[in-house]
Image 1 (tube, rainbow, N blue to C red):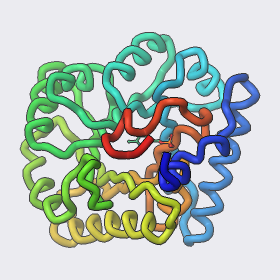
Image 2: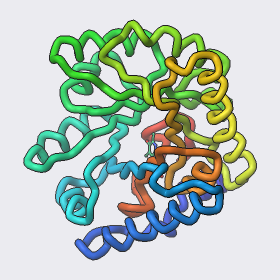
Image 3: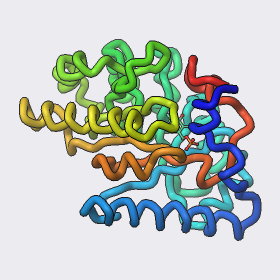
Length: 261
Ligand SMILES: *Cc1c(COP(=O)(O)O)cnc(C)c1O
């Protein structure tokens, strides 16, 4: 395991949430840090949405998170999202798929998700739109951009994002909400910050070019290890898993090829 990976996953520093007392505690810590980061950067904490990322966390524990006030969850893999959606159907929950999507899973996303944050191919937009039209649903989407320059990460190269956004209006079931990114995995805060700044500047340029292309112009950026930095750079959605639920046993390479672990 590399030093970079250690820094990114932070392992032991994320306490497990197992009992019904643990969830309000962990959520309280995260919310307080969001508020402090927002205040430092002259923003209001209500401008930042906390999306709890529940991958690998079993349904019994998600019920405790719901009791502690969570109303939505982000999942990286469609199959896992589908299973949890079905097993928790008695609760009124909003599901966000935040990981790379293969076209053969688009049907499941159209059936269960309110949001998809990893759109980076026209083909996926096309298949999703067709499935959504068939079931009469809409879907909030974020376009994923690779701001770290790492080959191994998903997402569009920044210079292709504008042209990509221009192709989306014809997919009328997709409601573009903004851009999404993962920063480089390192404890070098300046390099992490540069990724977030890049996404914000890209959003600003798209807006200047044509405000209709980018919806509300949201920025989904920031995870357990870097959400405060992301908020300082303008994040409107932070995707936080381990800081709420506890350190994950599975290496991040299971979710992103090349992430280490
Ligand atoms: C897992 C995941 C997160 C959250 O990561 P944590 O380290 O658990 O906060 C955010 N975004 C994506 C795309 C993920 O897969």
